[in-house]
Image 1: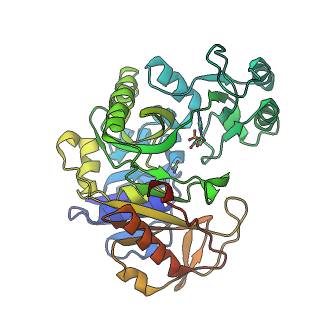
Image 2: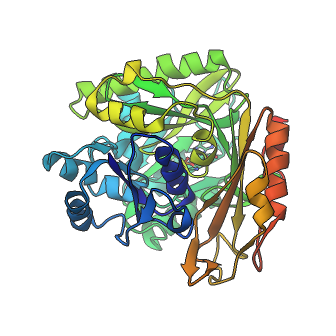
Image 3: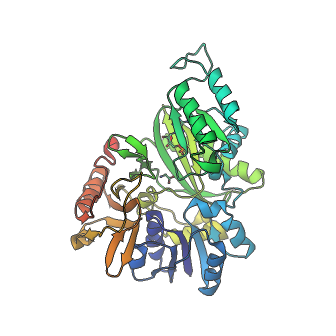
Length: 437
Ligand code: AMP
Ligand code: GLY
């Protein structure tokens, strides 16, 4: 069968790599793909169609007899790509636009979790500067939660409801910061229409981790848990990014925690969505805060994470294609879904200046010795081919991954590969996975 992967990041490069391993797959098309998917050779080829150009993607699927489409990023999901493909009688992995609201509307997600008793931070929703400012005035000035004073206190987490590339969250330490955030969102409109509605959440303490499921709407299979590194700087400092590295599994997600995640979060979410008429299908990303063994939902995403995919997929021993097809055709509960023993880590190499402005077009050199490093996979994100040279074309450039019997060895291998790759201004964190060692 021919398969189409939609997207252009390292997540999609990892998906193309995993799907191409299946003997049942003939050609893997990636739209639009990147410099990595352009040069995998074998079964994988890029098609120059934007991830949101649904009409052109439908034409491609008809022209190339594509039997299964997998949607990587959230924008086409929000635009209803799954609805359109299903109306055309096509097989597609992902949720409908209605079901994808678990990611694309934080207001929808919070109200849904409240209706179904799914553990998450307390919240309030505002749709004007005046109402948000009034709310700030009512908050306690205490800096800690005092049990006899059940008023939410500082910090407060202020979120644009819509999607904004993981950047729509401001953590306000006090009243002044909250008032500035309100002005930035409602008046300066730094997040545009994504902040037409704004969610105020109580601040959760604990450790973050993510859990990923593939679901047909009722049955689901779990990948390994993972931990992302969202901040640009070592020691989790500086600005938020799309993600600077990840590892899997996350030791904080013990079997007991995973059991709670399944019982208190995943099952009620799938049942609740189905009961409300928006059966949730495809990948479900559950972003968690775990405090004293109790998980709460920080966010849902309607897709796999980037860079988490780059560690989660290499740890899947079974055929990903079989599972993807079963998630559409049925039989997901019976398909093999085995994980490798050991661990995987990925280190993101970024352009100088990222996540602010950065320059592109820098030549990338990869020492061929990287190909001989055991367990190493170099997934591309912002790269492009210019004739015979590979050049940078984005903020996050490469996601250098390694798997090994232990996390320490996986990290050693990944950093050995990073040291054999260069481009002017390359930036990466040296402390990926350090917390888990
Ligand atoms: P989100 O886009 O909702 O995942 O938020 C981005 C990041 O902000 C998360 O990964 C957390 O580090 C932080 N965050 C979001 N919500 C909360 C919360 N309620 N309490 C503490 N930190 C949070
Ligand atoms: N790594 C976080 C995300 O994909 O949203």
